[in-house]
Image 1 (cartoon, rainbow, N blue to C red):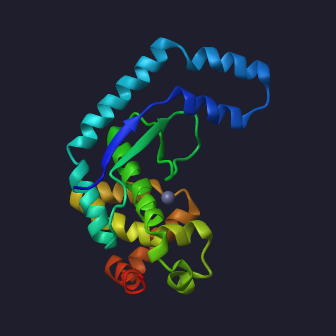
Image 2: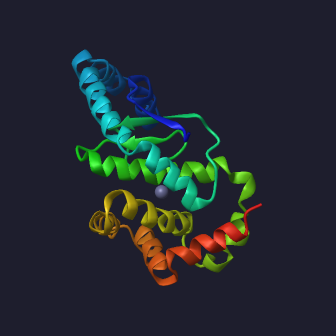
Length: 202
Ligand SMILES: [Zn+2]
């Protein structure tokens, strides 16, 4: 069985992020009241439950597809995916997703960050320097997304269909680094990119 994903909203985590952003005590005091408002916590908890329900319809299939496409195994049994509103971008460890009303979008975003996470779990098997030699002229962000996008093309197509895949690719067009990574996947083909990656695995 692949890892079980649990979506979590944590006001404590939200506070911590705010504390990293500011030193202003007055501002923090205001935020404490806002963040610990019970109705607000209930709202986020409900959102999380709704998201969980939607994820559970595709979760196992998604997690198996990610691992099968990468040819890497999940190391963890349970993974918490935190949802937060007060961040500018999502990240992989701890898996933290920027809230969106569009739950389909969040599912795709979760899969993106979990892909990074699977790479992180398998760090001792991957020789990134060797793998990235061909892409040495690309930005760090582009380099970090070429393989992932080759994998996502496969996973998104199988889970959501080609039309949705095109929507997700389109959503990245305003970010030059992401856009470039999709271009490379298109030019080289997902199969070749994944094959080259698998070849250098330890
Ligand atoms: Zn990413």
